[in-house]
Length: 101
Image 1: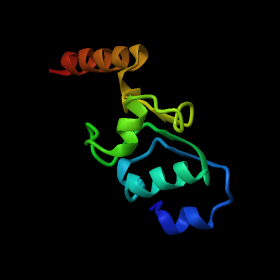
Image 2 (image 1 turned 135 degrees about the horizontal axis):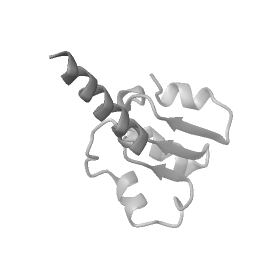
Image 3 (image 1 turned 120 degrees about the vertical axis):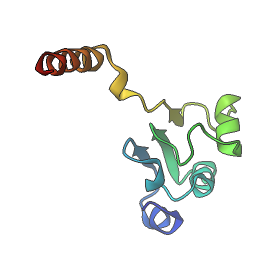
């Protein structure tokens, strides 16, 4: 798990990216602290500990495009599955399964 202790050991200027599981990052409190202090240069999150995101100062600052955070936090919905090619594959697979029954 990525937590405060691990990030404090990391070199300053790190860019943290999590596209795996929201629980991989222990909580966003220390992420906010590390961004504010400049220890983290940036953060990209495709998954969050709680989805939809709860109210948190970091997410509020992102929504408001606060100057200290602008361009340093990227949040995207965890929806890589919902690409046109993937949806086409699902439909195709379903049709093939239907032929078996």
